[in-house]
Amino acid sequence: MAAIHHTTMTPTKLELLTGWLPKQSWYLGGAQTPELVRAGGFRLDDPEGAVGIEFMVVADAAAPEPVAYLVPLGYRGAALEGAPEEALIGTSEHGVLGTRWIYDGVHDPVVMAQLGALLRGEATPQHQSESDTPDPTVIVRAAGPDDGPAVEVNRVLRQAEAARSTSGHLVAGWTWPNGTAARGVLATVATPR
Image (cartoon, rainbow, N blue to C red; front, top):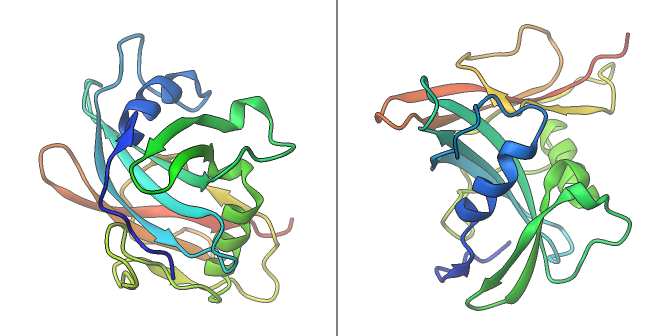
């Protein structure tokens, strides 16, 4: 199980995401700088213990209507070989672990493998800020044997309790900037066509 260190990161995750998020094709904000707040998320454990895995939900309070985004994060102690340049969100100095290379998890094979394992019912979601603590608020409908191997991450979150299809899916919650709770589908298993 991954240990959560209650320490500093410089720059912070939100500072890194504030510069990175507006450059993404799926970003819905305008020309203004986003005003990001941590809104929710959970962690997964890397069986090898080398990569920190976090699924962070951030809400942009600067938009006319707040928008929630899911950003899977892979924290590494060295650069990820072969990763595309746009996969690197940035580097940060961790108060305990030193320099961390923080990647967009959809480009990190360890992050995506563990998300696939979660959607097959083979991994347990962990609390975002407590060590060795399962997060029972993250609900997984495990993929069936006929579901495809491809996992789709919903970057822009919409409130909904379940996926419309029968494929495997992951539902979790977040909190809007005004304090209202929401739940929606964060990821699905793509069904073969």
